[in-house]
Length: 333
View (cartoon, one colour):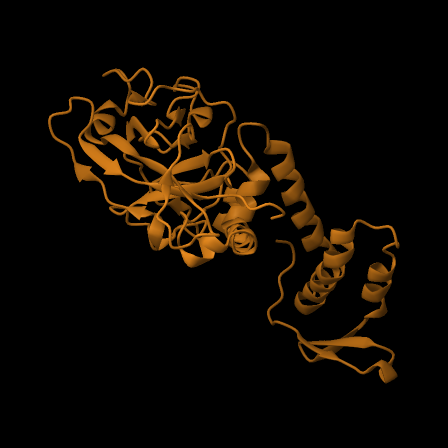
């Protein structure tokens, strides 16, 4: 991005008696920065600022300014970075969130997801409830509500280019949605009726339906309500690894970092129930070679699953049984 520097700078902070000057030594020459700029920006926040912003902005400003001084950020490099963010915004819409994808490849969404889980959910920390994972940039609201036992695979015929792989990877996925109350940690989880299991994944060509004009609208997406035993069931496909899109700024940025773009095969879920914390998560197929090197760092051991061969079912070659455990919401949290 813009001008590059052959050597990382060394930064030394002088005492307040030396006029609060930051000295950056680079290629043997000294460059001085006035640290009072950072203090002025922080002090500009008014007394009626939003409480959370007043809490976090001093740290954000100091980190940003320290970063710029540490790497000797140039105007050309800053302008290039701003255009990258602007381009992400221009590409984003209700079907794809490019800015979120940029955060994903930097590991930020995974980190924020972990921080949030630790703050709001004692059950997640203890390992009782199902771990969360990132939402990703291709979620769509209002997927069709389907009866249990139906398929999210639409219009699959031999004319579809990936028909043979879809048949080979056809899968029956079932399980229960259970409730865990952190106030009674020794009690076993209990089934949740009318919980909603919202699911989506790519086709065997590695594309979500909104990326692929040849797929029907809402293909490989669906919502299912659990029965009295908390059970859900649907037909889908075993997920495949795929590269994140390289047609936008996030993918181009990844290439500049000389990083591979692949995500391991995974299925997205949002599981919700009245009186419980909504769970956003993914499950990962253990056959996938990218389990240990996910380009967005979202894999967690408890979310890696194993599909078993399925017999005497003309609709599926594989099966998976997976239970989701939701945490009962506590008042005030």
